[in-house]
Length: 85
Ligand SMILES: [Zn+2]
Ligand SMILES: [Zn+2]
Image 1 (spheres, helix red, strand yellow):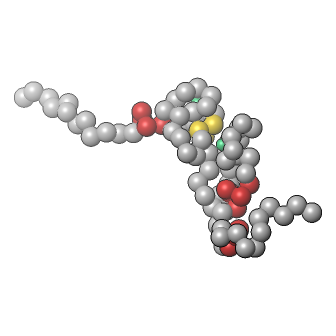
Image 2: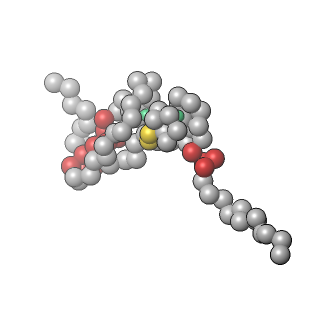
Image 3: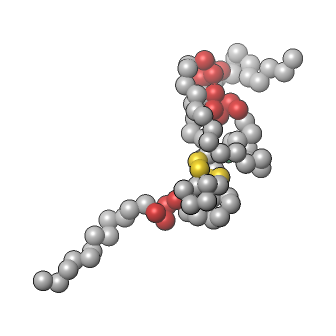
């Protein structure tokens, strides 16, 4: 019987705190996707790319499938389109 985590593991309680995250994407090469304990602990999981529906790793902002960078779309405060009056 494989025991995924031992009771004396410092994070063991997190498996039972009722918080789980639901994976929305899966990449077989991604260590986060392949470790169910990330979801069981309620940690942030990989995201779905808004552009291609692909895989954006939880610890990154760039889509594995199309190279889209989430941060490129963040609204910066460039409200410098002051119209000349
Ligand atoms: Zn992943
Ligand atoms: Zn993408």
